[in-house]
Length: 185
Image 1 (cartoon, rainbow, N blue to C red):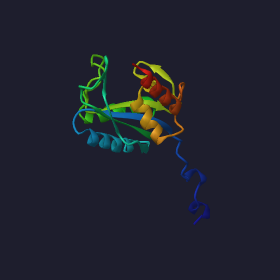
Image 2 (image 1 turned 90 degrees about the vertical axis):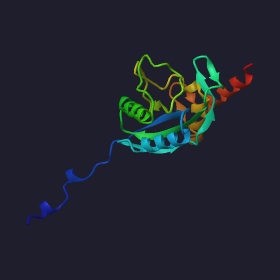
Image 3 (image 1 turned 180 degrees about the vertical axis):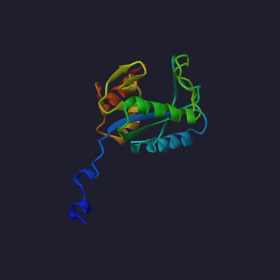
């Protein structure tokens, strides 16, 4: 037998997978068993193809936001943030996020659907590496992330060095947001 046939070919050796990007996904729920839904959604994120969960923050309870502002009479939200490493394109990851929402009872998204309504699960893609997108179907980074304590607080808890592309360090953004809230009448 030819010895060369028994040797490993350099081309047959496994190569390292292409590096993934870190993505931040905000999770929220204010209907049903919120804690169970959030836990299940985090587990589903970890099972997505080409994706692995890095860490998720402890959920926090927050007042519901409506178009008119905070609504203490509406069911409270449970919110958290999960950091994943993924090789999925941002639009593909977003499609998976919408599918997870639908499996947990959220109606499919449509232009007619009112924003900021009660829901069993809401998943928002906050950042996907350093990708910047102004496409109507996907704006990255999330356009209102810097205004949301319930995104910035959990994100900072799991990534003290976090940065929101184009806006700055999450720690600085959160401090400014909280200072503004304390100074508001």
